Structures are given as C-alpha cells and as structure tokens.
Length: 90
Image 1 (tube, rainbow, N blue to C red):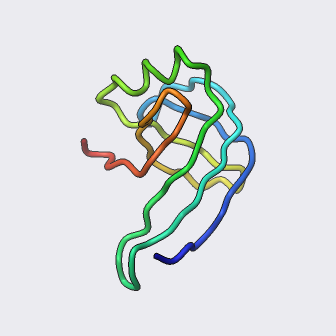
Image 2: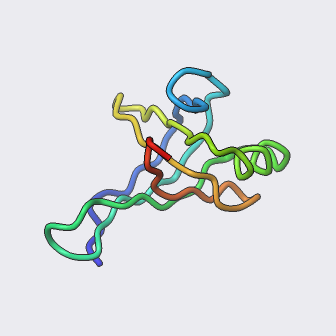
Image 3: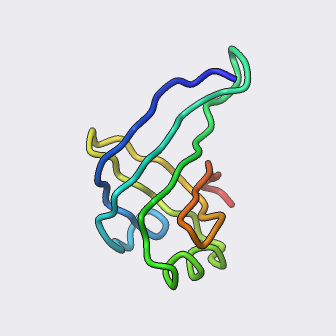
C-alpha cells in the first residue's frame, strides 16, 4: 500500500453533484494498493450523527470539494463520518 496524499481542511459537501449540504472539516488519505492501480480514498468528515445515518442509507454518492478545488466522490460508511471512494455511476 502506497500513501499518495494526506489532506486536511474544510470542504463543501454535496449530495450527488448538485445539492449543497454543508461546509465540513475533513481528514482524507488517498492511497493505492500497488503501482498502476487506481487511487482509493479513506477518511473522515465531521458531520452530525443524524446526517451520517442519512448519507449511509442514500444510494446517491457524496461529492467533497476540497480546499484546493479538486472534487472527491465518496460514500459514507459509518455514523462516525468515515468515508471511502465511490463510483459516480452507482
């Protein structure tokens, strides 16, 4: 496993590509299993418990616009705000 980046800051959280939800603190690690493999995302967003439950049940991915203007596509995987990579197409 190779860590490519560790990111920390505040980002704009959206449901899908369009519905703005909030500005949230994030801690994200971007890594890959081996050279040539696609990068993966693992991290945590500081969101309220009730929101995390709602996001976990949603079939729609989350978008996180980072401070540097890049966008990551995520799925909420726990009520503590843990997130992982998501496929925008489902």
